[in-house]
Length: 257
Image (cartoon, rainbow, N blue to C red; front, side):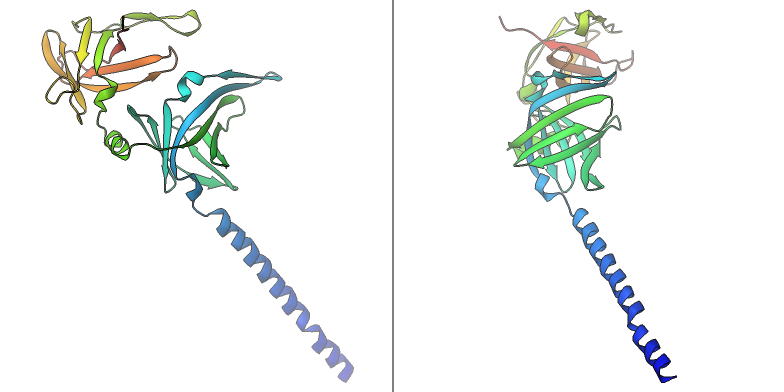
């Protein structure tokens, strides 16, 4: 009887030991999860794109098509798990939120495509997470003017980017030998001149410019960005209060003689 009780007494610590081992394993897993979920402070700062490669996969082969002309224009500003995207110093392209999935930092772009971030030795690589192809961009640390980025995020113009002479585009050749035609419901001047003087057609800190549309001065919203399809600047003006509606007008910069 006593030996049976002694055996039962000796058996008691075993489940307690197993229980403690399970708690220890749970704490280890919890610690790992906490580590993975830490904020991406290492990404914080300003970045300049130095390489932009488009790649295609499928049909048993892979090919790469470099788009270096676009690389020097795109800049990022990362702060508190938010990416601010610029065509610096002219255009603010919007922001995206960083999040982590299975230990990988990523975000979604405007087309709901996933972008994966990888940081090694102050070189940031952002790759499309898409099986049929996408782009790989490489960034290095940079320093952007905080006043310019603040102004761009607020939706204001950087007047230095649109000053000069521009001509309205009615037709132009595009990629792969295609041809584009543009039709506008307005009577437009063939060329316009924009400058950055206060109170002029293009003024510092403003969101709009004034041009002649159907013979009268009309306020137009502005979008100025790099068109990497034709590898040229694109100035897009949209009249605000025209009786003919709001149709975007495409301009290209006049070539200097």
